[in-house]
Length: 81
Image (cartoon, rainbow, N blue to C red; front, side, top):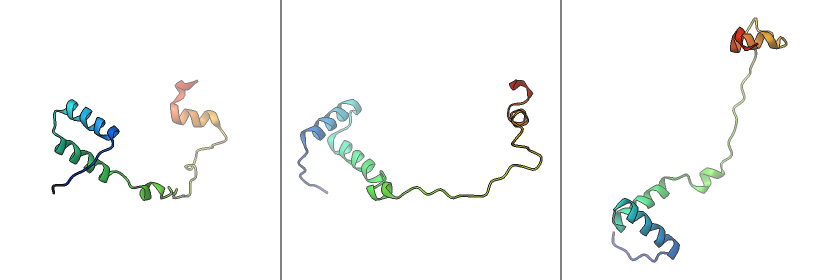
């Protein structure tokens, strides 16, 4: 599709910098940047709150969480002391 596009000066400068850095032409650079923008999460996606799915947790049988030394032995081995 052929169209005329008026760019703000800051965007034009960024495009010129990227074109110089990558050696690509204007058409290829603009299309690559547009693709990245369209693939990025939308504001609606970002506004969706993160929800934590709770699940029941318990210590394995035979592990006494009140015995900190024993728990550390299980996690780190006896060398932690």
